[in-house]
Length: 124
Image (cartoon, rainbow, N blue to C red; front, side):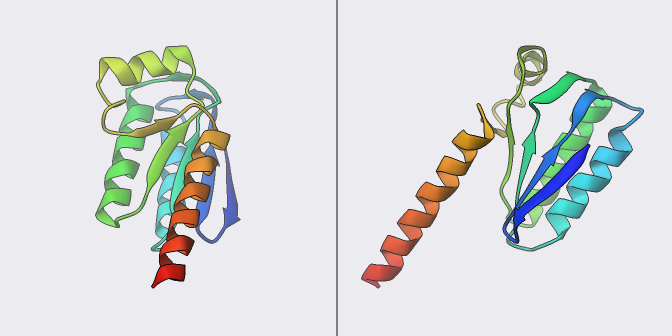
């Protein structure tokens, strides 16, 4: 698993392979670290390389979502494969979590938000 910080406002966590009880603690540590690194940080979990996800891995993602929400931070997922997507749909977590097709789709929403903010500042 790897964590990349694109800038002080965005951290991308990229788990790989099987996310299960044997490595859920490591993912939990990385997600908490990314969320707690900066009060204004946005955390994106790129699931493109995740083959399987068990209940321990799902629990870590839910825990990270709650922590981010408590801190009023954005927490999103992207690149979810079909087998993992099915788990999110069955548990209805696809309704609770912000999920994007790719990191590019997510980054486009950030760019649009920045553009809106800069227009608002220009008119103020």
